[in-house]
Length: 82
View (spheres, rainbow, N blue to C red):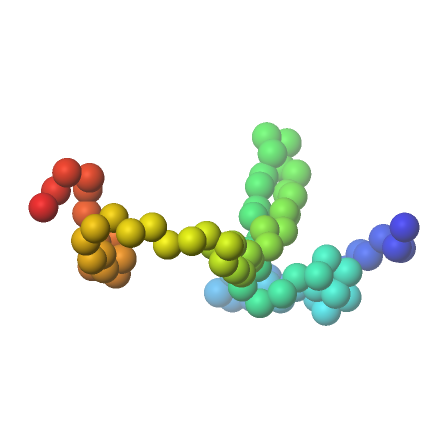
């Protein structure tokens, strides 16, 4: 098991933080990943790494529904709307 990584960072005036390089490397954090923050009732802060997934739909085959679709134009439409 790798050694425990402990580090600290400062919250800047715009409330942003930088994840220290040692922590990024140990957790394998990459650009596009998200950090999910949670504060428990007792004030304990925890952070969960949510990995960005690329190519999730690569194995799916397109389905011909008999009409052209435009995902960019149709994404806000509600089923049954014309």
